[in-house]
Image (cartoon, rainbow, N blue to C red; front, side, top):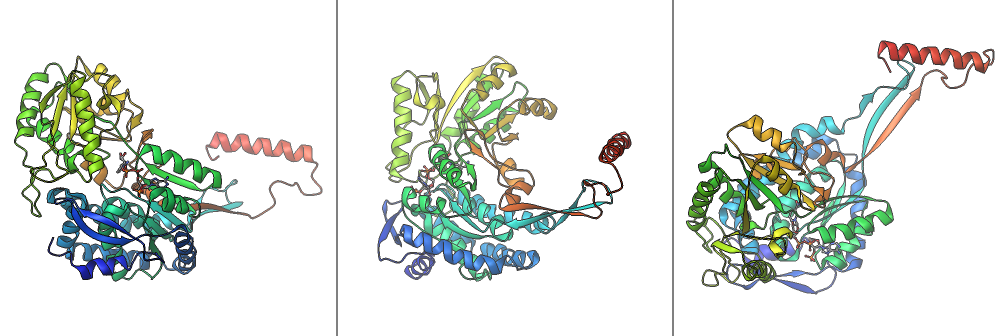
Amino acid sequence: MNTITDALVARLCDRVSASTSDTLSTVEVFTGGTLAKVPRSSPQDVAEAVEAARVAQRAWANVAVADRIAIFERFHALVLEHSEQVLDLLQAETGKSRRDAFLEAASPLVTVGYYARKAPKLLASQRREGMMPLLVKTTELRAPKGVVGIITPWNYPFALAFTDLIPALIAGNAVVLKPDTQTALSTLFGVDLLYQAGLPQGLLRVVLGDGPVVGTAIVDTADYVGFTGSTRTGREIAARAGQRLVGCSLELGGKNPLLILADASLAKAATGAVQTCFSNSGQLCMSPERLFVHTAVYDAFVARFIEEVKRMNLTAAYDFSADMGSLTSRRQLETVSAHVEDAREKGATVLAGGRARPDIGPFFYEPTVLTDVTPEMLCYDSETFGPVVSIYRVADDVEAIARANATMYGLNASIFSKSIPHAESVAAQLNAGTVNINDGHVVGFGSADAPMGGMKDSGLGRRNGAEGLLKYTEAQNVSVQKVPLTTPPRWLPYGLFAKNMRALLRLFRKAGIR
Ligand code: NDP
Protein backbone atom coordinates (compact mmCIF):
# COMPACT_ATOMS: atom_id res chain seq x y z
CA MET A 1 0.00 0.00 0.00
CA ASN A 2 2.93 2.27 0.72
CA THR A 3 3.81 2.12 -2.96
CA ILE A 4 0.68 4.10 -3.98
CA THR A 5 1.97 7.67 -3.85
CA ASP A 6 0.34 10.91 -5.03
CA ALA A 7 2.99 11.15 -7.75
CA LEU A 8 2.12 7.68 -9.03
CA VAL A 9 -1.62 8.46 -9.07
CA ALA A 10 -0.94 11.72 -10.97
CA ARG A 11 1.23 9.89 -13.52
CA LEU A 12 -1.43 7.24 -14.08
CA CYS A 13 -4.22 9.82 -14.39
CA ASP A 14 -2.20 11.52 -17.14
CA ARG A 15 -2.78 8.40 -19.22
CA VAL A 16 -6.56 9.04 -19.30
CA SER A 17 -8.07 10.75 -22.36
CA ALA A 18 -10.15 13.45 -20.67
CA SER A 19 -10.40 17.10 -21.67
CA THR A 20 -12.25 18.57 -18.67
CA SER A 21 -11.30 18.83 -15.00
CA ASP A 22 -14.24 16.61 -14.02
CA THR A 23 -13.22 13.81 -11.65
CA LEU A 24 -14.59 10.63 -10.11
CA SER A 25 -13.64 9.30 -6.67
CA THR A 26 -12.42 5.80 -5.92
CA VAL A 27 -12.40 4.06 -2.57
CA GLU A 28 -9.72 2.21 -0.62
CA VAL A 29 -11.83 -0.87 0.02
CA PHE A 30 -10.28 -2.02 3.31
CA THR A 31 -11.07 1.31 5.01
CA GLY A 32 -13.88 2.82 2.91
CA GLY A 33 -11.88 6.06 2.67
CA THR A 34 -11.12 7.93 -0.56
CA LEU A 35 -8.25 6.39 -2.50
CA ALA A 36 -7.97 8.71 -5.51
CA LYS A 37 -9.74 11.15 -7.79
CA VAL A 38 -9.50 10.08 -11.41
CA PRO A 39 -10.45 12.03 -14.58
CA ARG A 40 -13.87 11.60 -16.15
CA SER A 41 -14.01 11.38 -19.96
CA SER A 42 -16.86 12.66 -22.11
CA PRO A 43 -18.33 11.07 -25.27
CA GLN A 44 -16.39 13.75 -27.19
CA ASP A 45 -13.16 12.50 -25.52
CA VAL A 46 -14.04 8.98 -26.65
CA ALA A 47 -14.59 10.14 -30.24
CA GLU A 48 -11.24 11.96 -30.22
CA ALA A 49 -9.48 8.96 -28.63
CA VAL A 50 -10.86 6.62 -31.30
CA GLU A 51 -9.80 8.98 -34.12
CA ALA A 52 -6.30 9.44 -32.70
CA ALA A 53 -6.01 5.68 -32.15
CA ARG A 54 -6.99 5.16 -35.78
CA VAL A 55 -4.04 7.28 -36.91
CA ALA A 56 -1.60 5.43 -34.62
CA GLN A 57 -2.97 2.08 -35.81
CA ARG A 58 -2.03 2.67 -39.46
CA ALA A 59 1.66 2.82 -38.57
CA TRP A 60 1.39 -0.06 -36.10
CA ALA A 61 -0.14 -2.36 -38.73
CA ASN A 62 3.11 -2.03 -40.69
CA VAL A 63 5.30 -3.04 -37.74
CA ALA A 64 6.51 -6.66 -38.04
CA VAL A 65 4.73 -9.07 -35.67
CA ALA A 66 8.09 -10.04 -34.10
CA ASP A 67 8.77 -6.37 -33.30
CA ARG A 68 5.30 -5.96 -31.77
CA ILE A 69 5.92 -9.04 -29.63
CA ALA A 70 9.28 -7.70 -28.41
CA ILE A 71 7.36 -4.89 -26.65
CA PHE A 72 5.21 -7.44 -24.81
CA GLU A 73 8.29 -9.41 -23.78
CA ARG A 74 9.59 -6.24 -22.10
CA PHE A 75 6.15 -5.66 -20.55
CA HIS A 76 6.31 -9.21 -19.09
CA ALA A 77 9.63 -8.37 -17.40
CA LEU A 78 8.32 -5.02 -16.12
CA VAL A 79 5.20 -6.59 -14.55
CA LEU A 80 7.41 -8.99 -12.62
CA GLU A 81 9.77 -6.19 -11.62
CA HIS A 82 6.90 -4.03 -10.30
CA SER A 83 4.74 -6.83 -8.94
CA GLU A 84 4.56 -5.43 -5.38
CA GLN A 85 3.01 -2.21 -6.73
CA VAL A 86 0.58 -4.20 -8.87
CA LEU A 87 -0.53 -6.21 -5.84
CA ASP A 88 -0.87 -3.07 -3.67
CA LEU A 89 -3.06 -1.38 -6.28
CA LEU A 90 -5.20 -4.46 -6.81
CA GLN A 91 -5.76 -4.88 -3.09
CA ALA A 92 -6.48 -1.21 -2.48
CA GLU A 93 -9.04 -0.96 -5.30
CA THR A 94 -10.74 -4.36 -5.07
CA GLY A 95 -10.22 -5.41 -1.44
CA LYS A 96 -9.08 -8.86 -2.58
CA SER A 97 -6.59 -10.91 -0.60
CA ARG A 98 -2.95 -10.62 -1.64
CA ARG A 99 -3.03 -14.28 -2.71
CA ASP A 100 -5.86 -13.52 -5.14
CA ALA A 101 -4.01 -10.40 -6.31
CA PHE A 102 -0.89 -12.49 -6.90
CA LEU A 103 -2.79 -14.96 -9.09
CA GLU A 104 -4.45 -12.12 -10.97
CA ALA A 105 -1.15 -10.37 -11.68
CA ALA A 106 0.22 -13.59 -13.22
CA SER A 107 -2.59 -13.83 -15.75
CA PRO A 108 -1.30 -11.32 -18.37
CA LEU A 109 2.09 -13.05 -18.18
CA VAL A 110 0.47 -16.30 -19.34
CA THR A 111 -1.20 -14.37 -22.19
CA VAL A 112 2.09 -12.77 -23.28
CA GLY A 113 3.93 -16.10 -23.10
CA TYR A 114 1.31 -17.86 -25.18
CA TYR A 115 0.85 -15.30 -27.95
CA ALA A 116 4.58 -14.51 -28.13
CA ARG A 117 5.04 -18.12 -29.22
CA LYS A 118 1.90 -18.58 -31.33
CA ALA A 119 1.00 -15.23 -32.89
CA PRO A 120 3.70 -15.08 -35.60
CA LYS A 121 2.38 -18.26 -37.20
CA LEU A 122 -1.31 -17.52 -36.59
CA LEU A 123 -1.03 -14.06 -38.18
CA ALA A 124 1.19 -15.08 -41.10
CA SER A 125 -0.42 -15.56 -44.50
CA GLN A 126 -1.41 -19.20 -44.99
CA ARG A 127 -1.57 -21.11 -48.26
CA ARG A 128 -5.01 -22.75 -48.62
CA GLU A 129 -6.28 -25.34 -51.08
CA GLY A 130 -7.29 -23.55 -54.29
CA MET A 131 -10.52 -24.41 -56.11
CA MET A 132 -8.54 -26.55 -58.60
CA PRO A 133 -5.20 -28.18 -57.79
CA LEU A 134 -2.29 -26.43 -59.55
CA LEU A 135 -4.61 -24.11 -61.46
CA VAL A 136 -5.71 -21.90 -58.57
CA LYS A 137 -3.48 -20.43 -55.87
CA THR A 138 -5.32 -19.38 -52.70
CA THR A 139 -3.90 -17.53 -49.70
CA GLU A 140 -5.58 -16.52 -46.43
CA LEU A 141 -4.44 -13.19 -45.04
CA ARG A 142 -5.23 -11.71 -41.63
CA ALA A 143 -5.69 -7.94 -41.41
CA PRO A 144 -6.29 -6.08 -38.13
CA LYS A 145 -9.83 -4.83 -37.49
CA GLY A 146 -8.62 -1.28 -36.79
CA VAL A 147 -9.63 0.21 -33.44
CA VAL A 148 -10.81 -2.34 -30.87
CA GLY A 149 -12.94 -1.09 -27.96
CA ILE A 150 -12.43 -3.03 -24.73
CA ILE A 151 -14.77 -2.61 -21.75
CA THR A 152 -13.92 -4.35 -18.49
CA PRO A 153 -15.39 -4.78 -14.98
CA TRP A 154 -13.97 -4.21 -11.51
CA ASN A 155 -13.42 -7.76 -10.24
CA TYR A 156 -10.21 -8.56 -12.19
CA PRO A 157 -9.08 -5.17 -13.53
CA PHE A 158 -5.56 -6.26 -14.39
CA ALA A 159 -6.20 -9.78 -15.70
CA LEU A 160 -9.29 -9.13 -17.80
CA ALA A 161 -8.15 -5.89 -19.47
CA PHE A 162 -4.76 -7.32 -20.45
CA THR A 163 -5.98 -10.78 -21.46
CA ASP A 164 -8.07 -8.99 -24.08
CA LEU A 165 -5.88 -6.10 -25.12
CA ILE A 166 -2.60 -8.03 -25.52
CA PRO A 167 -3.86 -10.17 -28.44
CA ALA A 168 -5.74 -7.17 -29.90
CA LEU A 169 -2.52 -5.12 -30.05
CA ILE A 170 -0.35 -8.03 -31.22
CA ALA A 171 -2.81 -8.54 -34.08
CA GLY A 172 -2.03 -4.98 -35.25
CA ASN A 173 -4.98 -3.06 -33.80
CA ALA A 174 -5.17 0.07 -31.69
CA VAL A 175 -7.23 -0.18 -28.50
CA VAL A 176 -9.56 2.21 -26.70
CA LEU A 177 -10.07 0.79 -23.22
CA LYS A 178 -12.74 1.59 -20.65
CA PRO A 179 -11.95 -0.02 -17.31
CA ASP A 180 -14.38 0.26 -14.42
CA THR A 181 -13.73 3.55 -12.59
CA GLN A 182 -13.30 2.02 -9.10
CA THR A 183 -10.41 -0.14 -10.30
CA ALA A 184 -8.97 2.19 -12.94
CA LEU A 185 -5.55 2.66 -11.33
CA SER A 186 -4.74 -1.07 -11.43
CA THR A 187 -5.46 -1.11 -15.16
CA LEU A 188 -3.70 2.21 -15.77
CA PHE A 189 -0.59 0.93 -14.01
CA GLY A 190 -0.37 -1.90 -16.55
CA VAL A 191 -0.99 0.56 -19.40
CA ASP A 192 1.86 2.71 -18.09
CA LEU A 193 4.17 -0.34 -18.00
CA LEU A 194 3.22 -1.16 -21.58
CA TYR A 195 4.24 2.34 -22.68
CA GLN A 196 7.47 2.01 -20.69
CA ALA A 197 8.04 -1.23 -22.61
CA GLY A 198 7.97 0.74 -25.86
CA LEU A 199 4.36 0.73 -27.10
CA PRO A 200 4.02 3.57 -29.64
CA GLN A 201 2.35 6.61 -28.04
CA GLY A 202 -1.39 6.86 -28.60
CA LEU A 203 -1.93 3.26 -29.66
CA LEU A 204 -3.68 2.33 -26.42
CA ARG A 205 -6.09 4.97 -25.10
CA VAL A 206 -7.92 4.83 -21.78
CA VAL A 207 -11.23 6.56 -21.11
CA LEU A 208 -13.09 6.61 -17.79
CA GLY A 209 -16.69 7.33 -16.90
CA ASP A 210 -20.15 5.81 -16.59
CA GLY A 211 -20.68 2.70 -18.70
CA PRO A 212 -23.93 3.81 -20.36
CA VAL A 213 -22.23 7.08 -21.46
CA VAL A 214 -18.57 6.33 -22.15
CA GLY A 215 -18.99 2.60 -22.87
CA THR A 216 -21.80 3.32 -25.31
CA ALA A 217 -19.65 5.91 -27.09
CA ILE A 218 -17.01 3.22 -27.61
CA VAL A 219 -19.52 0.71 -28.95
CA ASP A 220 -20.78 3.39 -31.37
CA THR A 221 -17.33 4.10 -32.85
CA ALA A 222 -14.97 1.11 -32.50
CA ASP A 223 -14.42 -1.47 -35.26
CA TYR A 224 -14.82 -4.38 -32.82
CA VAL A 225 -15.84 -4.59 -29.16
CA GLY A 226 -14.45 -6.92 -26.48
CA PHE A 227 -16.65 -6.80 -23.39
CA THR A 228 -16.49 -8.48 -20.00
CA GLY A 229 -19.29 -7.88 -17.54
CA SER A 230 -22.89 -8.72 -16.81
CA THR A 231 -25.25 -10.55 -19.16
CA ARG A 232 -27.64 -7.59 -19.05
CA THR A 233 -25.03 -5.13 -20.34
CA GLY A 234 -23.68 -7.73 -22.77
CA ARG A 235 -27.07 -7.95 -24.47
CA GLU A 236 -27.21 -4.15 -24.90
CA ILE A 237 -23.71 -4.08 -26.37
CA ALA A 238 -24.42 -6.95 -28.78
CA ALA A 239 -27.60 -5.23 -30.00
CA ARG A 240 -25.80 -1.91 -30.52
CA ALA A 241 -22.80 -3.50 -32.24
CA GLY A 242 -25.25 -5.46 -34.39
CA GLN A 243 -26.86 -2.23 -35.60
CA ARG A 244 -23.46 -1.12 -36.90
CA LEU A 245 -22.56 -4.62 -38.16
CA VAL A 246 -19.35 -4.66 -36.13
CA GLY A 247 -18.35 -7.81 -34.28
CA CYS A 248 -18.15 -8.26 -30.55
CA SER A 249 -17.06 -10.87 -28.05
CA LEU A 250 -18.82 -11.07 -24.70
CA GLU A 251 -17.59 -12.74 -21.50
CA LEU A 252 -20.60 -12.64 -19.20
CA GLY A 253 -22.00 -14.08 -15.99
CA GLY A 254 -22.33 -17.60 -14.67
CA LYS A 255 -24.07 -19.76 -12.09
CA ASN A 256 -21.40 -22.39 -12.18
CA PRO A 257 -21.88 -25.96 -10.98
CA LEU A 258 -19.30 -28.04 -9.12
CA LEU A 259 -19.89 -31.80 -9.15
CA ILE A 260 -18.50 -34.10 -6.47
CA LEU A 261 -18.81 -37.60 -7.96
CA ALA A 262 -19.09 -40.75 -5.84
CA ASP A 263 -15.45 -41.64 -6.50
CA ALA A 264 -13.97 -38.22 -5.57
CA SER A 265 -11.09 -37.84 -3.15
CA LEU A 266 -12.96 -35.96 -0.43
CA ALA A 267 -9.86 -34.27 0.97
CA LYS A 268 -8.94 -32.87 -2.47
CA ALA A 269 -12.55 -32.01 -3.26
CA ALA A 270 -13.07 -30.08 -0.02
CA THR A 271 -9.84 -28.10 -0.37
CA GLY A 272 -10.43 -27.50 -4.07
CA ALA A 273 -14.01 -26.38 -3.48
CA VAL A 274 -12.96 -23.87 -0.80
CA GLN A 275 -10.24 -22.50 -3.07
CA THR A 276 -12.50 -22.01 -6.09
CA CYS A 277 -15.78 -21.00 -4.43
CA PHE A 278 -14.22 -18.24 -2.35
CA SER A 279 -11.53 -16.98 -4.75
CA ASN A 280 -11.80 -13.21 -4.92
CA SER A 281 -14.61 -13.54 -2.33
CA GLY A 282 -16.70 -15.29 -4.98
CA GLN A 283 -16.61 -12.23 -7.24
CA LEU A 284 -15.27 -14.32 -10.07
CA CYS A 285 -17.31 -15.21 -13.11
CA MET A 286 -15.94 -18.78 -13.05
CA SER A 287 -16.50 -19.45 -9.32
CA PRO A 288 -18.99 -22.22 -8.51
CA GLU A 289 -22.14 -21.20 -6.64
CA ARG A 290 -23.92 -24.59 -6.86
CA LEU A 291 -22.39 -27.79 -5.47
CA PHE A 292 -23.96 -31.10 -6.52
CA VAL A 293 -22.71 -33.90 -4.28
CA HIS A 294 -23.34 -37.62 -4.83
CA THR A 295 -25.42 -39.03 -2.01
CA ALA A 296 -22.81 -41.72 -1.22
CA VAL A 297 -20.26 -39.08 -0.17
CA TYR A 298 -22.59 -36.20 0.72
CA ASP A 299 -22.34 -36.29 4.51
CA ALA A 300 -18.60 -36.88 4.60
CA PHE A 301 -17.91 -34.16 2.00
CA VAL A 302 -20.13 -31.57 3.65
CA ALA A 303 -18.51 -32.16 7.05
CA ARG A 304 -14.99 -31.67 5.63
CA PHE A 305 -16.00 -28.70 3.50
CA ILE A 306 -17.67 -26.86 6.38
CA GLU A 307 -14.69 -27.52 8.64
CA GLU A 308 -12.37 -25.92 6.05
CA VAL A 309 -14.71 -22.97 5.40
CA LYS A 310 -14.93 -22.21 9.12
CA ARG A 311 -11.12 -22.20 9.36
CA MET A 312 -10.76 -19.50 6.67
CA ASN A 313 -8.90 -16.38 7.75
CA LEU A 314 -10.49 -13.06 6.74
CA THR A 315 -8.15 -10.11 7.15
CA ALA A 316 -7.83 -6.61 5.74
CA ALA A 317 -4.07 -6.72 5.27
CA TYR A 318 -1.59 -5.88 2.54
CA ASP A 319 0.23 -9.18 3.07
CA PHE A 320 -0.32 -12.86 2.26
CA SER A 321 -2.03 -13.73 5.58
CA ALA A 322 -5.68 -13.71 4.45
CA ASP A 323 -7.43 -16.69 2.86
CA MET A 324 -10.17 -14.36 1.67
CA GLY A 325 -10.47 -10.59 1.34
CA SER A 326 -13.35 -8.16 1.14
CA LEU A 327 -16.17 -7.64 -1.30
CA THR A 328 -15.35 -4.68 -3.55
CA SER A 329 -18.24 -2.32 -2.91
CA ARG A 330 -21.28 -1.53 -0.85
CA ARG A 331 -23.41 -2.57 -3.84
CA GLN A 332 -21.85 -6.05 -3.77
CA LEU A 333 -22.31 -6.29 -0.01
CA GLU A 334 -25.99 -5.38 -0.39
CA THR A 335 -26.55 -7.97 -3.15
CA VAL A 336 -24.83 -10.73 -1.20
CA SER A 337 -26.68 -9.87 2.05
CA ALA A 338 -30.01 -9.74 0.16
CA HIS A 339 -29.45 -13.19 -1.38
CA VAL A 340 -28.59 -14.76 1.98
CA GLU A 341 -31.43 -13.04 3.88
CA ASP A 342 -33.93 -14.05 1.20
CA ALA A 343 -32.75 -17.68 1.40
CA ARG A 344 -32.84 -17.68 5.20
CA GLU A 345 -36.38 -16.22 5.27
CA LYS A 346 -37.60 -18.84 2.79
CA GLY A 347 -36.23 -21.77 4.80
CA ALA A 348 -32.62 -22.35 3.74
CA THR A 349 -30.18 -23.68 6.33
CA VAL A 350 -26.99 -21.67 6.89
CA LEU A 351 -24.20 -24.18 7.60
CA ALA A 352 -21.41 -21.58 7.70
CA GLY A 353 -21.09 -17.79 7.52
CA GLY A 354 -24.18 -15.78 6.67
CA ARG A 355 -23.18 -12.39 8.02
CA ALA A 356 -21.30 -9.23 7.17
CA ARG A 357 -18.09 -8.48 9.09
CA PRO A 358 -17.83 -4.68 9.46
CA ASP A 359 -15.43 -5.34 12.34
CA ILE A 360 -12.83 -6.39 9.72
CA GLY A 361 -13.67 -3.88 6.98
CA PRO A 362 -16.75 -2.07 5.65
CA PHE A 363 -17.53 -4.59 2.86
CA PHE A 364 -16.37 -7.91 4.37
CA TYR A 365 -18.80 -10.83 4.29
CA GLU A 366 -18.16 -14.33 5.65
CA PRO A 367 -17.80 -17.32 3.32
CA THR A 368 -21.30 -18.75 3.41
CA VAL A 369 -22.64 -22.25 2.79
CA LEU A 370 -26.36 -22.94 2.38
CA THR A 371 -28.44 -26.09 2.08
CA ASP A 372 -32.20 -26.61 1.58
CA VAL A 373 -32.14 -23.98 -1.19
CA THR A 374 -35.29 -24.08 -3.32
CA PRO A 375 -36.26 -22.53 -6.70
CA GLU A 376 -38.18 -19.59 -5.20
CA MET A 377 -34.99 -18.30 -3.52
CA LEU A 378 -32.89 -15.64 -5.31
CA CYS A 379 -29.65 -17.57 -4.92
CA TYR A 380 -31.11 -20.68 -6.58
CA ASP A 381 -30.53 -19.50 -10.13
CA SER A 382 -29.49 -15.81 -10.05
CA GLU A 383 -25.80 -15.04 -9.94
CA THR A 384 -24.87 -13.88 -6.42
CA PHE A 385 -21.29 -12.96 -7.41
CA GLY A 386 -20.14 -13.28 -3.82
CA PRO A 387 -18.93 -15.85 -1.25
CA VAL A 388 -22.19 -17.80 -1.12
CA VAL A 389 -22.62 -21.40 -2.25
CA SER A 390 -25.56 -23.81 -2.08
CA ILE A 391 -25.09 -27.57 -1.68
CA TYR A 392 -27.50 -30.08 -3.22
CA ARG A 393 -27.60 -33.87 -2.70
CA VAL A 394 -27.90 -35.86 -5.96
CA ALA A 395 -28.69 -39.55 -6.47
CA ASP A 396 -26.33 -40.21 -9.39
CA ASP A 397 -24.39 -38.68 -12.28
CA VAL A 398 -27.52 -38.36 -14.41
CA GLU A 399 -29.21 -36.13 -11.84
CA ALA A 400 -26.00 -34.15 -11.24
CA ILE A 401 -25.60 -33.45 -14.97
CA ALA A 402 -29.27 -32.54 -15.47
CA ARG A 403 -29.27 -30.12 -12.52
CA ALA A 404 -25.91 -28.63 -13.45
CA ASN A 405 -27.27 -27.89 -16.93
CA ALA A 406 -30.60 -26.49 -15.68
CA THR A 407 -29.49 -22.85 -15.87
CA MET A 408 -29.52 -20.08 -18.45
CA TYR A 409 -25.74 -19.79 -17.99
CA GLY A 410 -22.93 -21.97 -19.35
CA LEU A 411 -19.60 -20.46 -18.42
CA ASN A 412 -17.67 -22.89 -16.23
CA ALA A 413 -18.15 -26.24 -14.48
CA SER A 414 -15.91 -28.26 -12.19
CA ILE A 415 -15.79 -31.97 -11.42
CA PHE A 416 -14.01 -33.89 -8.69
CA SER A 417 -13.38 -37.61 -9.26
CA LYS A 418 -10.47 -40.03 -8.85
CA SER A 419 -11.24 -41.51 -12.28
CA ILE A 420 -10.24 -39.15 -15.10
CA PRO A 421 -12.14 -41.13 -17.81
CA HIS A 422 -15.25 -41.01 -15.62
CA ALA A 423 -14.90 -37.26 -15.08
CA GLU A 424 -14.17 -36.66 -18.77
CA SER A 425 -17.32 -38.52 -19.81
CA VAL A 426 -19.36 -36.35 -17.41
CA ALA A 427 -17.58 -33.20 -18.69
CA ALA A 428 -18.66 -33.92 -22.26
CA GLN A 429 -22.31 -33.84 -21.11
CA LEU A 430 -22.09 -30.44 -19.38
CA ASN A 431 -23.18 -27.28 -21.20
CA ALA A 432 -20.27 -25.12 -20.11
CA GLY A 433 -17.53 -23.43 -22.13
CA THR A 434 -14.87 -24.59 -19.66
CA VAL A 435 -14.85 -27.72 -17.51
CA ASN A 436 -12.14 -28.14 -14.87
CA ILE A 437 -11.45 -31.62 -13.50
CA ASN A 438 -10.04 -31.88 -9.97
CA ASP A 439 -9.75 -28.08 -9.93
CA GLY A 440 -12.33 -25.29 -9.81
CA HIS A 441 -11.32 -22.83 -12.51
CA VAL A 442 -7.59 -22.08 -12.60
CA VAL A 443 -6.34 -24.83 -14.94
CA GLY A 444 -9.02 -24.14 -17.54
CA PHE A 445 -8.46 -20.37 -17.54
CA GLY A 446 -4.67 -20.75 -17.43
CA SER A 447 -4.46 -23.26 -20.30
CA ALA A 448 -4.17 -20.49 -22.85
CA ASP A 449 -3.85 -22.79 -25.87
CA ALA A 450 -7.56 -23.69 -25.66
CA PRO A 451 -10.38 -21.18 -26.16
CA MET A 452 -12.29 -20.12 -23.04
CA GLY A 453 -15.72 -18.53 -22.86
CA GLY A 454 -19.40 -19.01 -22.28
CA MET A 455 -22.20 -21.08 -23.78
CA LYS A 456 -25.86 -19.93 -23.57
CA ASP A 457 -26.31 -16.59 -21.71
CA SER A 458 -22.68 -16.61 -20.54
CA GLY A 459 -21.32 -15.07 -23.69
CA LEU A 460 -20.39 -14.92 -27.30
CA GLY A 461 -16.96 -15.70 -28.72
CA ARG A 462 -13.89 -16.84 -26.84
CA ARG A 463 -10.69 -15.51 -25.34
CA ASN A 464 -7.40 -17.49 -25.38
CA GLY A 465 -6.29 -19.92 -28.08
CA ALA A 466 -6.19 -19.10 -31.78
CA GLU A 467 -9.74 -17.73 -31.54
CA GLY A 468 -8.70 -15.20 -28.87
CA LEU A 469 -6.28 -13.63 -31.37
CA LEU A 470 -7.99 -14.16 -34.72
CA LYS A 471 -11.25 -12.55 -33.53
CA TYR A 472 -9.37 -9.24 -33.72
CA THR A 473 -8.62 -9.77 -37.42
CA GLU A 474 -10.47 -9.80 -40.71
CA ALA A 475 -9.81 -12.90 -42.79
CA GLN A 476 -9.09 -12.16 -46.43
CA ASN A 477 -9.12 -14.79 -49.18
CA VAL A 478 -6.83 -13.96 -52.10
CA SER A 479 -7.24 -16.42 -55.00
CA VAL A 480 -5.36 -16.44 -58.27
CA GLN A 481 -6.75 -18.13 -61.38
CA LYS A 482 -3.74 -19.34 -63.37
CA VAL A 483 -5.70 -20.47 -66.47
CA PRO A 484 -9.36 -19.70 -67.30
CA LEU A 485 -11.48 -22.33 -65.54
CA THR A 486 -15.06 -21.20 -65.77
CA THR A 487 -15.26 -20.11 -69.42
CA PRO A 488 -14.51 -22.69 -72.12
CA PRO A 489 -12.24 -21.73 -75.05
CA ARG A 490 -14.17 -20.45 -78.14
CA TRP A 491 -13.66 -23.72 -80.05
CA LEU A 492 -15.22 -25.89 -77.25
CA PRO A 493 -19.04 -26.12 -77.16
CA TYR A 494 -20.37 -25.40 -73.65
CA GLY A 495 -22.13 -28.80 -73.47
CA LEU A 496 -18.84 -30.63 -74.03
CA PHE A 497 -17.08 -28.33 -71.54
CA ALA A 498 -19.76 -29.12 -68.90
CA LYS A 499 -19.42 -32.87 -69.59
CA ASN A 500 -15.64 -32.70 -69.15
CA MET A 501 -16.01 -30.71 -65.96
CA ARG A 502 -18.45 -33.26 -64.54
CA ALA A 503 -15.97 -36.04 -65.34
CA LEU A 504 -13.21 -34.08 -63.66
CA LEU A 505 -15.32 -33.52 -60.53
CA ARG A 506 -16.08 -37.26 -60.43
CA LEU A 507 -12.37 -38.07 -60.78
CA PHE A 508 -11.36 -35.59 -58.06
CA ARG A 509 -13.89 -37.07 -55.65
CA LYS A 510 -12.78 -40.64 -56.42
CA ALA A 511 -9.16 -39.67 -55.87
CA GLY A 512 -10.15 -37.76 -52.72
CA ILE A 513 -8.56 -34.58 -54.09
CA ARG A 514 -11.59 -32.27 -53.81
P1 NDP B 1 -21.51 -4.43 -15.77
O1 NDP B 1 -22.01 -5.11 -16.98
O2 NDP B 1 -22.41 -3.53 -15.05
O3 NDP B 1 -20.22 -3.54 -16.12
C1 NDP B 1 -19.09 -4.02 -16.80
C2 NDP B 1 -18.44 -2.87 -17.55
O4 NDP B 1 -19.34 -2.38 -18.55
C3 NDP B 1 -18.10 -1.68 -16.67
O5 NDP B 1 -16.91 -1.07 -17.15
C4 NDP B 1 -19.31 -0.77 -16.89
O6 NDP B 1 -19.04 0.56 -16.62
C5 NDP B 1 -19.58 -1.00 -18.36
N1 NDP B 1 -20.96 -0.70 -18.77
C6 NDP B 1 -22.08 -0.67 -18.01
N2 NDP B 1 -23.17 -0.38 -18.77
C7 NDP B 1 -22.72 -0.23 -20.04
C8 NDP B 1 -23.35 0.08 -21.28
N3 NDP B 1 -24.67 0.27 -21.37
N4 NDP B 1 -22.58 0.14 -22.39
C9 NDP B 1 -21.26 -0.08 -22.34
N5 NDP B 1 -20.59 -0.36 -21.18
C10 NDP B 1 -21.31 -0.43 -20.06
O7 NDP B 1 -20.94 -5.57 -14.86
P2 NDP B 1 -20.39 -5.44 -13.40
O8 NDP B 1 -19.49 -4.29 -13.26
O9 NDP B 1 -21.52 -5.56 -12.47
O10 NDP B 1 -19.48 -6.75 -13.35
C11 NDP B 1 -19.88 -7.93 -12.80
C12 NDP B 1 -20.44 -8.85 -13.85
O11 NDP B 1 -19.45 -9.18 -14.81
C13 NDP B 1 -20.88 -10.17 -13.26
O12 NDP B 1 -22.17 -10.47 -13.72
C14 NDP B 1 -19.89 -11.19 -13.77
O13 NDP B 1 -20.37 -12.46 -13.94
C15 NDP B 1 -19.43 -10.60 -15.05
N6 NDP B 1 -18.07 -11.00 -15.32
C16 NDP B 1 -17.83 -11.92 -16.29
C17 NDP B 1 -16.54 -12.35 -16.54
C18 NDP B 1 -16.24 -13.33 -17.63
O14 NDP B 1 -15.09 -13.46 -18.03
N7 NDP B 1 -17.22 -14.06 -18.14
C19 NDP B 1 -15.42 -11.88 -15.76
C20 NDP B 1 -15.78 -10.92 -14.79
C21 NDP B 1 -17.08 -10.49 -14.58
P3 NDP B 1 -19.55 1.22 -15.22
O15 NDP B 1 -19.09 0.32 -14.15
O16 NDP B 1 -18.92 2.54 -15.20
O17 NDP B 1 -21.04 1.27 -15.31
